[in-house]
Image (cartoon, helix red, strand yellow):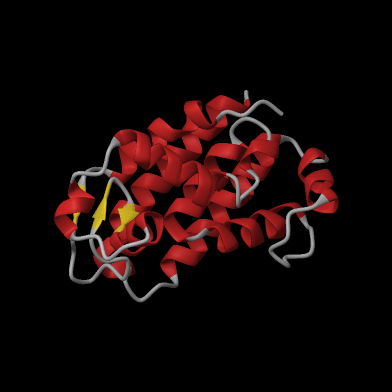
Length: 170
């Protein structure tokens, strides 16, 4: 597989937007989707919200690649599947992204992407994997207690990402 990180990242950044610090968001303060906690882990210090607001685009890309793209094995996934898994990893964590991918392709949902999971992905048309992941994510989001606050945005994001992923898979 070709590393398509640079083709997928703009879709993530579009949906993550700029600065956010919604009191009901369990992620807390974020800049372009990078939480203060993730930023502090990255910098190795008690970075401030002001420092997070000033994060460079290069640092944002490096964090997304190291913390979400590679842990979700997006570099080993077909075009389109890589985007929807990457977006899920950013939105809900790499562990959940790996398990949902495994569920979608009928692999053991143990969160470990290995040869069996990748073979199961390869055995299905990418557009089918994308559809299954889209449906699984919708069920997940609707079950969250913050759906009333964030659900409309999540559904819009999911729809737009699924359409873009489907286009990439064609």
